[in-house]
Length: 632
Image 1 (cartoon, rainbow, N blue to C red):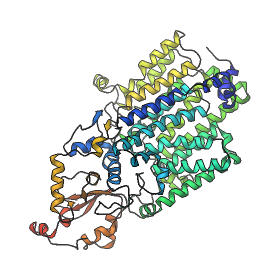
Image 2 (cartoon, rainbow, N blue to C red):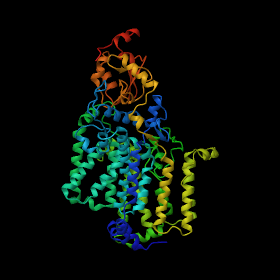
Image 3 (cartoon, rainbow, N blue to C red):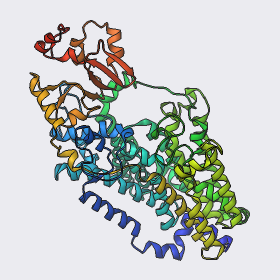
Image 4 (cartoon, helix red, strand yellow):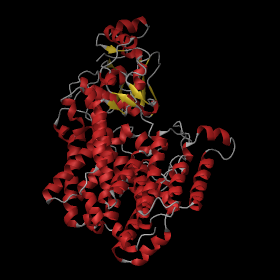
């Protein structure tokens, strides 16, 4: 059925929608979605579950499958299992102190990855508060569960605040959660994605100016300290401003905006106060240093995957662009495609001709969302100079780091279209959708050659078609009317994203992460440490990243987030200052390699060092080595 223009207009205008009887009645009901999400988070924590791929590390010490509930650990997520999770272990083992007394390097644990440290910034890290009250396994599980809860409830409440129904908002939040970017990068940038909607909700809060500013300061600090990574923070901030302008422009009036800006400035200042030392050190490094980037660099198939999310990946999480599966992630779903195919354009035209608040709101939303997406698309695709993006700080952002923010804009655009024009479900339109998806699938998989083989091994691309056929069948039979058709299309997009990407992260118990299994491998590490006068583990076959120190060993093989030039200088006195700085002044995985003739850097974030330089003199003499420098 086609809704009357007046009714459509009511749905478009948040203030009018709030006045409607149905909306008032729905607000009087408990928000069952929020209750369900919170309850699930509590159960998740009680079971000490995590989405960590630390099972890769457990396999490395001879305990494969220990604590694995379901799924497969992903080696590609080494940023998490080999760096971030070991640093949480290090913080726990170090008694939550700032400087790592258990490490040969004595490094500062304040860095861009949030850690449970016992300092003044702990008040802005609520995800870590349980570390000081319960077993670290439960606390670590909570730190993951609370972010999942914040993501789902935050985007749900944000879409409700933008005037969408609770059902639509819940489904849209879940569809966003199961995008490939959210799933593939969850254990690294998940905190930024999860806390972001609460920043916008803080802007929308109606409070006295001083409380409003205080709330903004807290949420801003919470957000920035959760993972200080500008390539995600900057595009999310731009997209957030566009969403507020599109849906709630009254919040950008000076009286409402000034307290928010004041609070944000205070939050940025608190973040700088806490991290100014590592920020200054990292800014002076060879890598990553102070990068200034131009636009472009996003392959066209990856850009198009924002509309067809399986265009660049396969069922078993292999990418089709020769990069890696994480680098081809997007924030896309099929929702905008479904909206464009099944939109009732006649009703949309009626709304635009009708005038009044509905037309004004619709035009503003479409114009702002499309303009914001177009600007970001130019930066993603076109080789524009870095200076063009400097005003928006985009010169600090690689184009493919914009995909979640653009996916959020496209999701909002799809919701706007479905709400404005309702839907027309017919088999003819289904054929258009099927043809579009099928042609994209064929193009992504190399044309029509070996069609049977690809049908057997790469069906996720076509998974949208069965649930869509069910929705169309129900619509044709008159079982879906009004907003139900739009809701059904959102559920289709959600279901396919969930099936395609929801199994990427495993469910891994945190108990073996913080209660190390005893194996022959760990016994060999202990033997190696006992043989060194300073208790250092020096042997071939050590675990990568920061795993050795995370497991509690004094290991030189580690990840140095901030370089320690003074530590290494005595061991390599023959290197001139320029070469030494070029090699060691960087964020790097320090690898200790037996038999290596000279130190080197095979890639930007790796430093390989000869093991023999760090052996005690008697062992070094046995190998025929001379002492190149004074032991520290």
